[in-house]
Image (cartoon, rainbow over all chains, first blue to last red; front, side, top):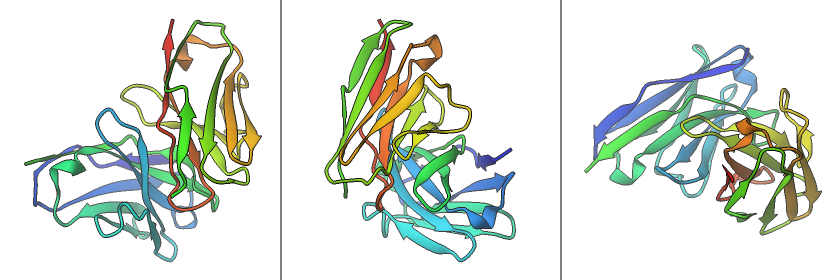
Length: 119
Length: 107
């Protein structure tokens, strides 16, 4: 069974750094792109970016390029999303997602990590 | 970025009704259109990909159609568990933009 299990909720202050994680299991982690989707409170879904764990090829949405860093450790089957300096506007639920085959079809989702950044 | 526009933004319907949600893209997608369902407090789930292919385990009352820039999601006979928010998403090019969502509520 494919599973993506994310790290727990975080409460941080603006300006602090943060790294959240997503562990994949039940499939070959290095063979599927894994990405992140943001959902701000009461709002819709935004595709942020994705990484191929096999070769660390990473693609970002222009809206998120330079704002976050996506990485992966294939030895432990885990992907990461990190911020060097959080803003209050980063407060949101973040979902990790597996990309089906080579397209941005998001076939499996993590349970979500709620990030709260207070000013 | 490709802009995705869903209509309606919200919809009231009854159990047993046939419901259609539409999604329009700002450019041709060559069939790279997907639909997701999100229930309150839960992660979204993939329903349909490549415009009309049902994801594994999704009930056959869900169907998708369309091509070019215009696509539809149809639920043939609404069940109580179908009341949720539905999103379309283009997977033609990065970033994989979503529509704003359609909230399906019980009448």
